[in-house]
Image 1 (tube, helix red, strand yellow):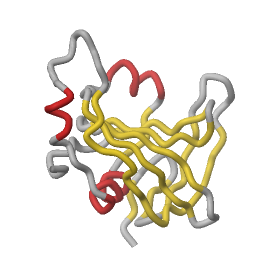
Image 2 (spheres, helix red, strand yellow):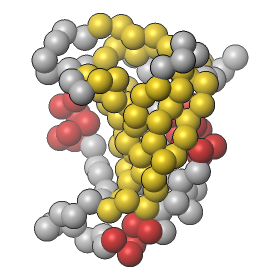
Image 3 (cartoon, helix red, strand yellow):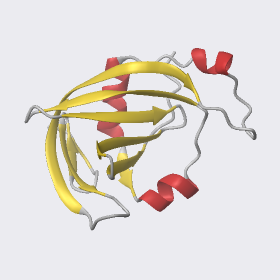
Amino acid sequence: MVMQRLAGWLAVGGLSVVAASSLASAQPQSFVVTSVHVDHSGLWRADPNGRQTATDCKAFVLHDPEALKWFQASSEVDQHTWLEELDWTQCSADGTLQTGDGRSYSWELDQSGRGRIVLNKNVSVFLKGAELPFAN
């Protein structure tokens, strides 16, 4: 089984992460990702300094297999890095992922390769990965 580093291990379908929150100390969370579903792609976030338009973002189409591939290759970063240091785009996708224990978590991913898994309203796992040029 191929292993990738993600604050623990992200195996093909397996994820062990340290959840980051400004409201609580980080606690390890372990789960096996069994599937990823894209609910929406081609989403646009308005930004007065942004160059992308809603029409541009409609071309960003992400499918379930590409999203799963991205999560398998991504790595965890802290919240500060995710907010302040990573590039981001106005074009994004969101969806849900299922874990081996039957839980479902929402996720967000922008075209620049900045994503997060939302464990609950106060706790997210912040991720970086490759840009998504394959998403068309």
